[in-house]
Length: 183
Image 1 (cartoon, rainbow, N blue to C red):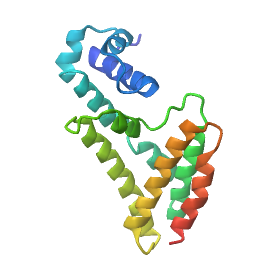
Image 2: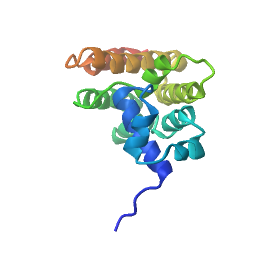
Image 3: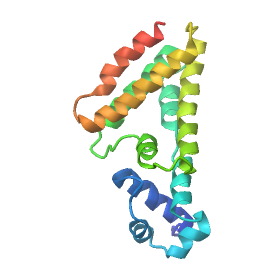
């Protein structure tokens, strides 16, 4: 018999799903209803909705999907970077794709002091470092700048796939990534 997850886990699961489907401005009542918890649990575990949103961003896996794609491509840095764009093609063509939760949150949360911004920036820095490491291993002449270019391509793919479903921006970005990899 599987035990039902506790209120904290149910809140995180509900908020992860609803904020991805509807954005970070989804109502607290919808999150509480989906999680099947009392309002008190939200405040006990997260201090409120801002804390919950921040924790969702912190535990959502960040760049792990990109690391998995790279691991599956073996040891060659070029193949590892290009595998990210192959994975993006798969991700962005799914019917339940709603874009990048981090970029969407960054754009939606206008309060510059909101703690979610630190989690969003940490994710973007992690992605940059992941690419910079691969470019360094490949002997790229400017791995930091190349990593910036690759992050821009990833962000562009994720945004473009939302606004033009079926356009396959990951395929276009993969070709551009090859140019970045060539230095």
